[in-house]
Image (cartoon, rainbow, N blue to C red; front, side):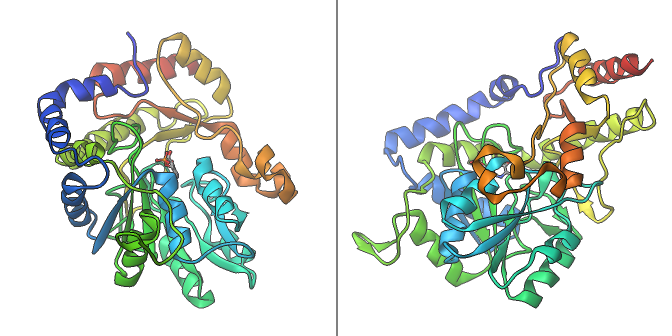
Length: 367
Ligand SMILES: Cc1ncc(COP(=O)(O)O)c(C=O)c1O
């Protein structure tokens, strides 16, 4: 049996009859950049996220860049971020000319540690970007306390966590704004690149709308420096269709996660994912830990089971951040996670017999 890590062809086959007419509608209108399909999607997704404003942008990476630009963050500023995340979080900070300051994570959730954030605050700190990794919201209450106490911005990197909640509050409502990705592997994936910024601040929303379209507030009137961070009409149409299914997809992922956790707790040296009691995780990834990660991964691959290592190397030791002079052991919890994590197939398209096969093959590995 083959078990892909993700099966987007299967998802498309199920939705083709709804998606193709939506795409055709955009083609007939030729409303290619932003336009009515994006405006409609923005309204629906704002409602879904419980946010006042939702602004469609060109990618999750651009969402973070546009948010930083809209908040006026640039050279001379420091931004505290985790090192255990996708590179885009750090790249965005560097792209606006600010300095990424890497903080370690909590071992159990993989999310940035508030204690480690506090230790990194200086008079140059302008923002914190907590990443809600793998579908679980970071420990936001202490993070917001630290931000308020020090008068610094909070940009949530919720690229992997659309619809996740903590104490009933959805991702994108804790900080000044939230940044989301519609990269195809996300729980809500476009047919290409796409992203979103949410905020409940009217002035910030106005600024983000300008920044996403070259700083324009009216045709050929440029108020601030912006960029081309517009979401395509076709992506808005596709996302609008997929949004109708998002809650049921989250539930299917959660059911898969619960089945894995029941079956894998106590097997070999595996640590199953820890979800805080107050969190509703949307399980963009189901990530276990094992000291035998590389052998286990090879065993699963030999059995045609897709699995992934997110992330194999910390950001703070990457060549592009060499100038920061950090060593692997400067963030020991991150370094250990990079050696041990392994993500299993969790998508809503995963069939029960495929899930059972994954569980059986993991048990065989430790037998
Ligand atoms: C945590 C995180 N931040 C940012 C991004 C960037 O999103 P995109 O790929 O849409 O640019 C991603 C997506 O891959 C991500 O996982």
